[in-house]
Length: 393
Image (cartoon, rainbow, N blue to C red; front, side, top):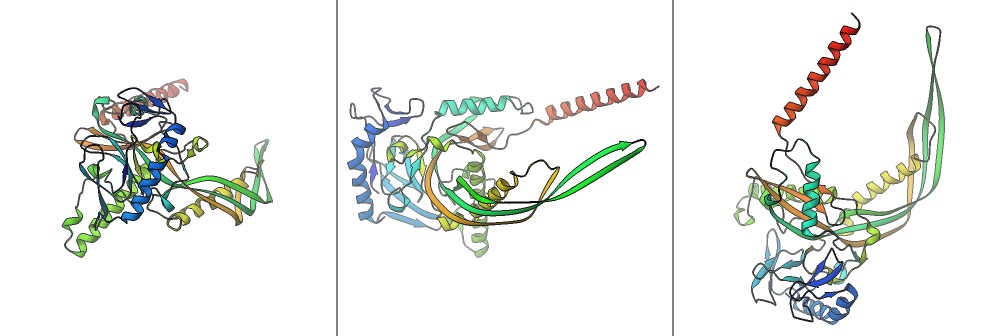
């Protein structure tokens, strides 16, 4: 497997992208370089490793039933490290130096754009702990920096779609007027028909392009585990596939949960941005996600036309039709901090938006705190009811 290290030209140490400075820095000699300089320095090497990768044709690949495992040799320490088929950038497990795997993001798998990390690891943890402080029913001692078992900065692949549609909508609208005359209350309901038609432009609808958690980012949180090597019967295979599907869905929910991103900050893709982080290449094609994309586009277009109807008490859509005139797809990488948080012998997974700090994950509740709060509310409600009763005596 062809590999590429981004080394400091001053001292030879590893260059990593620094989210705070939005520059590439060397932690040994403290040199700093902007992205344009690094891209120019390593343009030839990037082309070379891509060419080597194509020539090798994955001849060192080892295939297993749960995906393609590939062995590469770390150019820094010489150790052999195994990765999954979707890994495009990682760290050597032995010397911890960042390594970009050549060829993984080349050809049709080359992203169009990348959103560089904005939050460092420490700032992502700070965002997580700040979010926890706003949750009043967490168990005591939950929000603690020491409980982080591991946290990784990962670039995840997404499809982005823009569409221009011609759409038509017909709706039934109602206005309700009520008034009282003497002891009689009157209600008047006026019914109208509203029609809307026009061009609708929807941009930057994102859908995850990663269908499997082949790297096992959430394997530690699965209560039930099963290794592909232990598959012996058809029942075992079905059980294994169900567990894989569950794990992939959990990862997908986490990644969708940290949206939105400010995609106006995205940059043209350069492999150097991956140095110091983990990156995944897409394993879903356009056809795999088009149904979900189209369903969401349909929903957005209908809502956009419906929102142009105002001044009524209710609006019910009777008819909606659309025709997609133009469609543009792009493939980008988004930054996410993925962490497993160890609390009371339970490993809880969380995803943190690498740009905004928005966090997604299931937080535990303290039953005692929740019960005490419920009792307090009940006591206040009882006291108010008693006071109200006394006023009418």
